[in-house]
Length: 283
Image 1: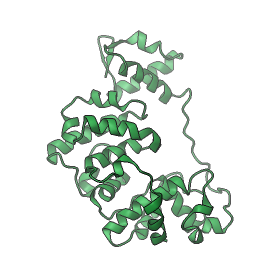
Image 2: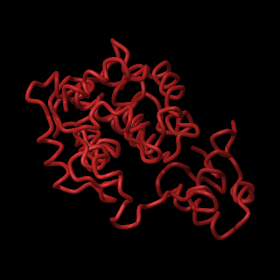
Image 3: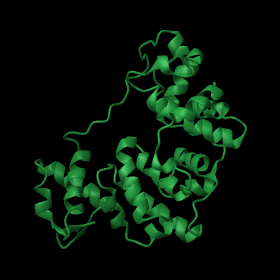
Image 4: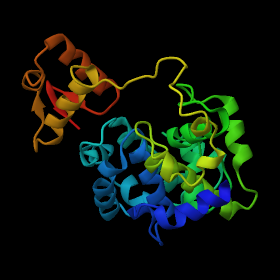
């Protein structure tokens, strides 16, 4: 199955800027931060703008964290911008500006967990690590277990299975990591999977069983409209797009529900995404 997936990936892989030859490990790390819980289509332009402005970790580390938050734009989950800035500072100060090549050093960076560290080792350094994102989890659940979807949270058993699927050769393992993610992203999708076009359908227990409905716990759905997350995004955008500090009362007026606006603003200040000084808010 690995061979069939790799052969399919050779001609089916999407052309993405962070996959271009010459992309640095820093560029890969930036892409992984931006792609967390964000569709690829929304990341392409911001990634290119980011890399044009900050082509190295040293470049980003030399600026204030507020610059990173401002440049994050509408990618969502803006704490990722702070963590990426923090990672850049650590890379600049402790790793001579070079993205680390081993799991422990990568996972010591702000905002880098097991998945992101493995992805950087695989995609930036050509190393052999299990890269287990939502797409890969879904692919392996359908192929191995015959289940429509994996558990809501990645389990230790899923990580062990992903490691068993890894080819021994590091280069081939890195290709498999990218190919299996791509398979889940464009063929073995959450809704309306293209099973007839799948290069490994003959190995898939879920397909062989007639694609049965999900029988596990209810799947989580991301809410947005009317939530604190939306309120935070609205308030942060007001400050982001203002050339001057924004008055506290003026800022709160941009959200219709006062208590929720105050709660959202408190969270933004606690997360250091916004700074309050004499009733004025700034990044």
